[in-house]
Length: 321
Image (cartoon, rainbow, N blue to C red; front, side):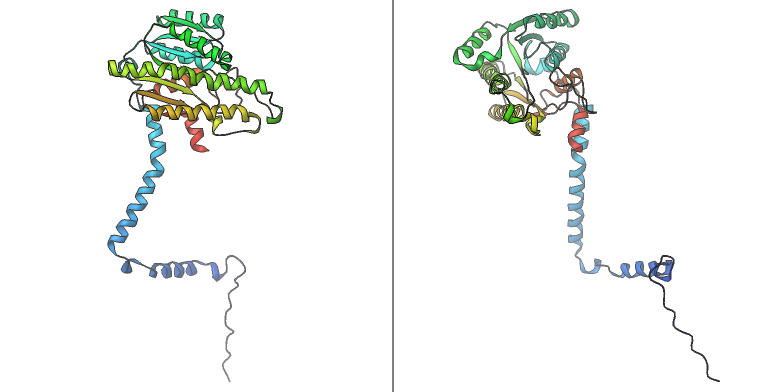
């Protein structure tokens, strides 16, 4: 009697659990992959070179967050009095917000403060707090930067600055204003207002003090410092702040030009704050910080950095974006 031939087994390849997906299939697949070994065909020096390239990119990827962690959280504040060899700092826009907090932070480091703004009454209040809390000397310069719209106003400002006999070694260009509006509805007078306060003040104040700072360096062999407060908005323009962003982009460019012009004599630091809660910015984002927090972080980096967003929380936001 003829022997029956069993039908060939055809695996079901359409459902999980079939022989196509059992452990034997993957075992054979792994064994096949292991046979594909390029090592015998690759020179040892090539392998070393590839490993070095991989190590380079790994270190490069990790270096930025590691260095940021050290700079912002571990590195101590410089001895500012020793580096700059003077006792006086001048802060514009000193009557409130970020500018007021810069005054307090510099006073903590032992500097007497010249406060500058258009609001004399508010400046008196801040000056009183500085004298009472930090036992420093103060001086007030009352000036409205809107007057810089003509040569007469520029000369008037220089005349006020000529009255300062103290040896100023730190200048903080902080005065600023902003208006949010759709571009075609932005009033021309507000554009000029932002330009005079945000940009012209920085230009005239810096141009006045830089010759004095260069003279200090030549006579005393001591550095001076200029802090120019721009904004991250100058790099991240939104539809309703085009004019403000343009003024802050100008401010940053001017600051970078100063830094490259006097790299050895003057510590020029550009500050690009993100969201800081002030009268100009109500905040409302998880990354919004207080002026006191921002100011401390900035002064901690003075003499070290050329450009900063300030606090580590804003550094983290920048890194995430």
